[in-house]
Length: 350
Image (cartoon, rainbow, N blue to C red; front, side):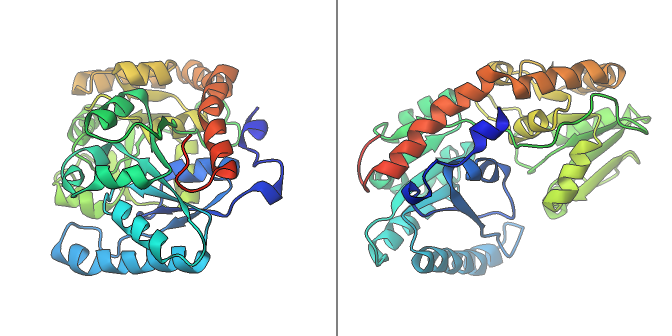
């Protein structure tokens, strides 16, 4: 089933030249869909990780120049761009005007934070999105939120995350001490402190929290850590995948309803037990997970439950990954979008 779903369109001649621009070091969502849609992903990471004057005054202009070079020299037919930052809407429309060839068509792929402060306050974002050919959100809750905030529903569509295509993982528990991995961006909705306190009370388990150490340190998470908690820093893809493969479980946590967790998709792709925050949306997407209320006691109980019954939870996740219903739901969202981008002209409607 995976090979069928992830194949590119049948006729190479019919595929428009597409690029997908992400202002980050790495993001799993675009790379999990590139084979299906046929775009090339360009990561444009910030030269400064912290929110400082240097990031705004020097980092952003450097990223703008790099983005302009990619678009103007690459001459794509379609440009996908991940939001935030929301001012990429303005930049893409400007680059379309400067483009030598007709177009390109524009696709905005909106993450939740693009619809919240501070990015929500970028002037004219929603009005300018009306000139985009497609505006994508990750779930029905955010679709309603986006429309309520003024995003034109004309070409507003849902495209959920696609689980990455990992190799099959054994349902046998990994060797050694139980190890739980928390993929993290250190946004305000991630209950990092509760995970640290749960780890303090589970000294026989290891906890590894990924993401930029500078952001973790800035928020004081690395102060007075228990010895069984490690902040790994931002890992290369191969090292991150290896860490997931050795995990006893993946912590997929948020305090906000409507957030579609990329960590959940990665856990499904890897066939790993999941500990997921208990919200209706996440229950509908990850029904095989162990759901928690994000409290220290709840996290402790979930880790102990999974460590004691790893094979059952891993098998349930693998079954979810391979289910035809899940795969067909994603295809039903993605196929019309792909067909539209292949067949349409700039400014047309889906």
